[in-house]
Image (cartoon, rainbow, N blue to C red; front, side, top):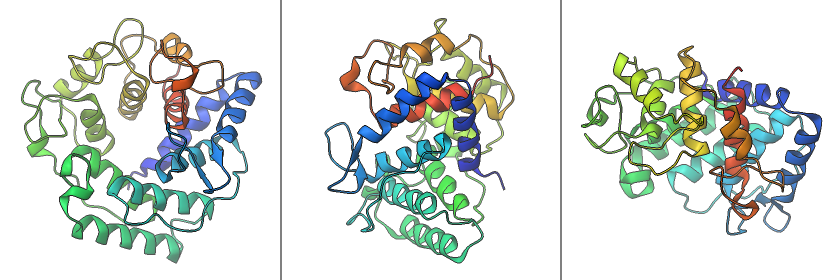
Length: 280
């Protein structure tokens, strides 16, 4: 069973190894600056403690071999699917729960019940079966040590690009959805690989979709992770684009023209993931 979180952690660690000690120190300082003692969580872009950002921060701490500050013990109240997955991942990392330990399996079973029983409005796009929702579910459940069924994404094949996928049934192609399908080990076609490569701009970054105005770091990280899973190199080196997303406060921004105020934990995670998913 392909363990997605293990592959992500391996890419993050490779990313750390490619950085200079000075850059690693700046990133470490930035991550710690995003911790909110009052909530026991890492903050979102609005300065609020958030389990979603906390899960990203804890994965970064693990890759950096950094002891995280004390994390809140109270679970989120009436969370949506994304935040419930984030809380589960945070528990696995914080308590160093082995995938074969009973607590990990209990987390996985509780998440499975959540996934199967909650109303659609708890899920992104109000749909539990999208590539993104299935990616989150399978990634988290597998991290808990439980098997998952093969993802059926037939209804989410893109209407405008053969081999690509959408987060809406027969919708327009999305890099996020297509990369999720590849990472879920949906067998890619020639069109899938062609779509991923077409979304890259010569400067190295990837577009979220074909009508996007400029590349972004999240799309770049997911595309590189998906291509790396397939042992395929991108058409252009992404190194310059990734480096240009690194800003003065030690974090990464979504694009290569944003200022410090827009750097956050999530994009710092994607910065290291992108770095480690590409071998120069």
